[in-house]
Amino acid sequence: MLVLGEEELLVVRAVNEVIATARATDAGAEVHDQEAAALSPGEVAAMVSPSLFGGARVVVVRRGQDARKDLVTALLSYVADPDPDVTLVVTHAGGAKGKALSDGLRTAGARVVPAAKITRHRERVDFIRAEVRGHGGRCSEAAAEALLAAVGNDLRELASACSQLVADTGGTIDASTVSRYYRGRAEVSGFTVADAVMVGDVAGALEALRWALQIGVNPVPIADALADGVRTVARVASAGRGRPQQLASALGLPPWKVERGQRQARGWTPEGLVEAMRAAADANAAVKGGAEDSGYALERAIMQVSMARAGGR
Image 1: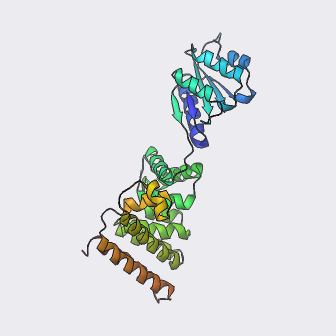
Image 2 (image 1 turned 90 degrees about the vertical axis):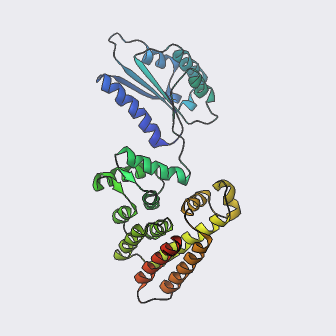
Image 3 (image 1 turned 90 degrees about the horizontal axis):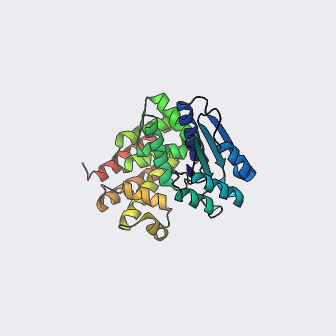
């Protein structure tokens, strides 16, 4: 197996899965785990040579891009005629360095497990939803966005949060669930409200808003998030069709925000967006102007934006 990429969590998972599979078949399976830079061809030969006692073995060579030429030659020579009792796993960063080894393993028929760095916002959202599904749960798009805003970009922390949420909730995770577990974070509450209302989830938006106000989140960032959500959808919708990367520079927005705006723009009409912008502006003026009941102003804005999306129904 060739584990190709530098996303540590994915690399660790791939290697651990091989070891677990080997030990499920043979509880006494030997595991040899070495760094390529510190490994000699002779040591590799000893680890993969047939054992007098038989049994499964797993040989893990980490950071294959650091392997010296003699080690690359030895590994590629071995995979041309491997021992059926040995599972060889090579991890490789995937760049130009040490490419002879990764290319040679591919040519020899190695199973390639991608472990590239997850850098795009869309990929992280997909990762969260896949993690929850893997634990037997369901996660809405808005919930994944909220969890990403709350926890940050570290995949280990995101994976841990997904596992914990599924265990604590029984598996169904929506934006309000994330708000309850990650309360006190204004950026989550504000954008969770905005994301929900822009896709027509009135109940989710109202619930997230009430949670935010109950735990003492300042209404101002919530009003700002709502206004930003409406503006983004209006700008993206007016730009017409196109790939997020192509539209991003013209709109002055990051590609992930354009992509999200395109998803949220479905179901909106130009007239509806005009009404929504007016409602968001009124809410901003009320909240920042010291309205007696900021919560009511925000709830009213949610209802008005939702009605605008539904064409006044």
